[in-house]
Length: 459
Image 1 (spheres, one colour):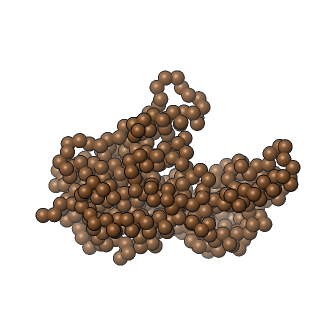
Image 2 (cartoon, rainbow, N blue to C red):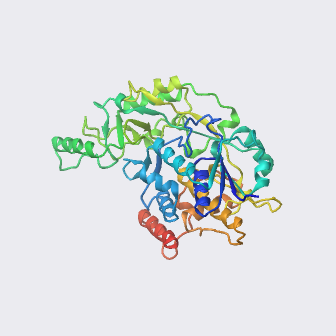
């Protein structure tokens, strides 16, 4: 009988896992229900579709996600390589043209002779038990696992609850933004210098516009901000049940819920004006909305931090109150969708493998279903699960466990360490063990040292 490894789910984790397995000469059956069926948040028939934001976050090594990306580059990650090659301007962040990114991933995987893409819905078209009985399996169905498969995962894991909720931000057309109000630029580089005249400063801004168009900024005065917040907190939302409200993950908090925590919450959060001066006044605005480039052509921009559960009509009305967006053309409205994850702390080890020794074949999980939160984090789990599935396929007793002082290893340890208050986790320096020796007070220097320690392992 032909030997292979199963990968269920063609998202970021599943795509990375399939590639890494095939790269090592092993056949892969990659199961993906699209284009036969789509989740509530997906619309692109390609693999590795990006839904919420087009940003893979910072590239700086003093940023936790920047370190994680560098670790993955050193391991030969396909998806990080494609992200680097489909990037759009985003300052120090790695943002991608999401359409081209998904197209390139799909092309490479579909042309690989060792990868068979099967467009069927596991749990409906094929029972999960049939798949896992055939071969080693990686379940990487993501945060939007279909109901039939979720029910089968419940049976497999013995869990009766597999979900939390998060939200995606809206996207607007650049051509519909009012540039008599809006201006380009990154935080801090746009503030007026003390020794600059107004004319010199505006000329510098004008020159920078031609070089740096990754962010568009919309300044607000106090009256505009307070009117906006008032309408936001009173706007109509898609109704959630009480248990759903408790499941919203803090890292992707809808902006309308954040606003209800106090009228200044947004002004000290996603709408903070620090690092900018309004070109119309030469002074720091009361609040500021940022939009980030979302495609290669810089024709569409997403509202940074504006994940939302507002009804579509309310999004147009309320977000249209933001100065510069009065006539905005919403290419895509924000949506609220169910996310699925297992209790990995009880179920998985540091290789993302199920601990149950009674399984006929080893089963791994990867992606946000494990409780890692974020694009790069999902890719990381796909990498680790694939490397270990390959070892088991080759009858090796060696486990590929990354040290917990690496970001890859720290994430794997976080989701596999018993924790009664388990919540999805992004890459962050807080999950790395402390440096030895004297305590470093300078945060940036500390993060640099933590990154250097990690990269020594990969080097």
